Image 1 (cartoon, one colour):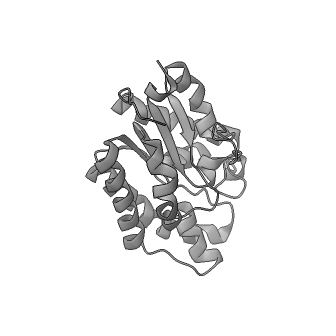
Image 2 (tube, helix red, strand yellow):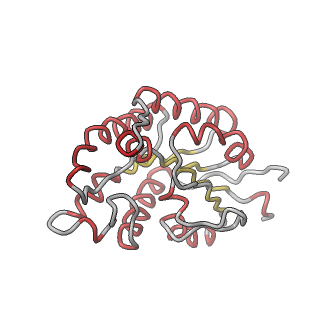
Image 3 (cartoon, helix red, strand yellow):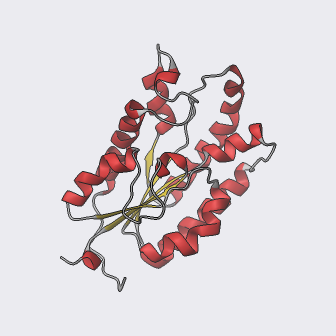
Length: 214
């Protein structure tokens, strides 16, 4: 099987997907959940592409969708964004309405589906409050989570309910042991994210072999 005939599994999102990858190296996967699932995917014959960029919101994905995502022609596409759409409201007074967030993602998913019909995994944003003021963010987070869940139904995508998964893992302990700032995961949390992704991918199966002229 040539490199052009391998199923291409693409991850796009914010810092949790980026996870410190070297953006000058297309093969770099960072040290987060993508790197944790990549070895088994590659062993199964897939090509793994990480397109995460720290700080991205939905609008940022829209700005680079045509240049970054579409040329990859994904057979399986994972989209994971939303916490920065929440966070910027509180730290920069720069909110993203849930309606705008949802419509932006709908348009992106529609374009990918129309071009490539990829299998889809949508990962909801999560927050583990480690500061009192972060508890006030949860209402905004819930709106964004519900938008992702609606889109998962609309696009027949597998959903990774990360907020539920990580909230359960933090019960009875200091949430900072999983994410010191409430968002960016330490290795234990990255492993939980990877496990959630694996569960979702098992529900939809592996993509068909694709071919392109790249």
